[in-house]
Length: 106
Image 1 (tube, rainbow, N blue to C red):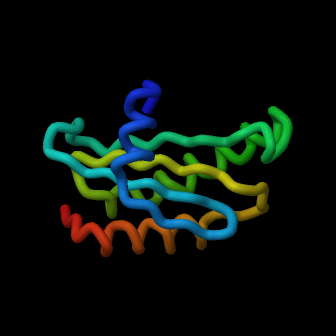
Image 2 (cartoon, helix red, strand yellow):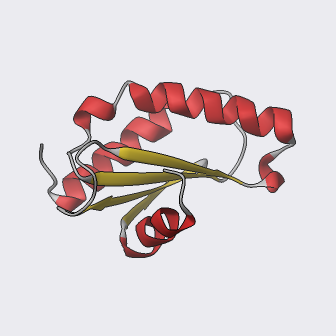
């Protein structure tokens, strides 16, 4: 995702799941593009530029492993709350929560 409008729509209208490290917003709608879209929000309060880019690379890689579990016509926004060495477990848990909660199936 690149447009602010997409981020805004997903964070305001999407389902939310939180952990101490991440907040995950999930929106699915027939009018969204067929392939899942993912966006990241990493504020300066998390760390400097180097830290934020390291976190972004790590989250993109971790999310790529789960894209086949995400239903078509979905948008996901991941907001980082604090810096950590590994986000994989938190990301997997939050994805399972929102996909179950919404009843979204592929």
